[in-house]
Image (cartoon, rainbow, N blue to C red; front, side):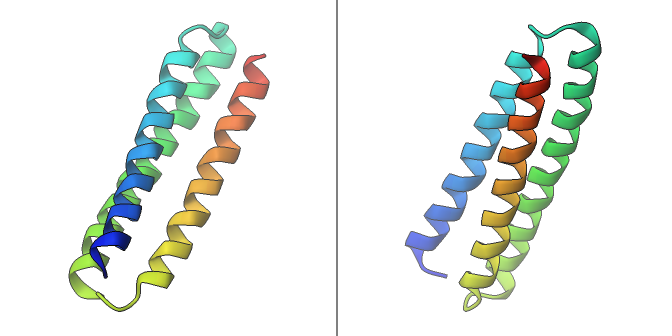
Length: 93
């Protein structure tokens, strides 16, 4: 995997972390019942992000030539997290 691709993956993972952190901040201002639901979703998102980081680390060490496979997986996971965040904000409003 090229240094450029590694940087892209690391940037995606960092962005996911920032988005999750922002969700945590936003959830604090929500109503109790909505906040509880959002906090459960945030915990699930954190778990998915950690899993992605682990998969990326393992992949980076084992499969230098399979960048497209992991890139597609990360993109799909990022989309899933984005949709979950949007759904959480819709409930909050």
